[in-house]
Length: 148
View 1 (tube, one colour):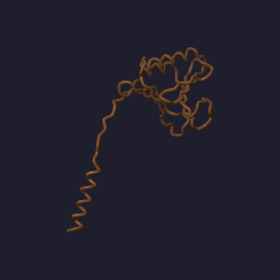
View 2 (cartoon, one colour):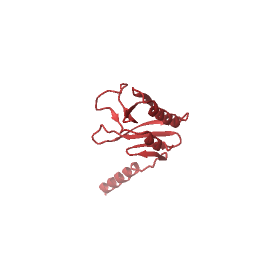
View 3 (cartoon, helix red, strand yellow):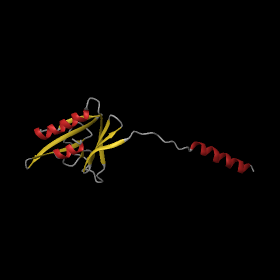
């Protein structure tokens, strides 16, 4: 009888601590997507820019985040599109929510391409396994991402 009582007490006490609690999260929606690159809006002002890291074996997705405080989504779009016109020789450095993002533009056969790179440090040409690289994007791809 004593063992049965102790077993019942143990079952009841463990059941009290194994409660499931649902946590409310912000709704997210994909703004635009182009093969392995997409822009996601979370809640009212938060955005995540995802791309598959072509340097990694598993090609995992990496992202950088930013808030749309002073119309930053349009500023980012306009800045990216300006790079297609100017095609700067050196990569452009951008800071997004504490992360360093490099925008590397190249021109091949008269067409401009953008490659997004994220590094662990301030050097865009660090040749190590920590450089995260997107596929080449065209101006049309960027326009589709931002639905412009």
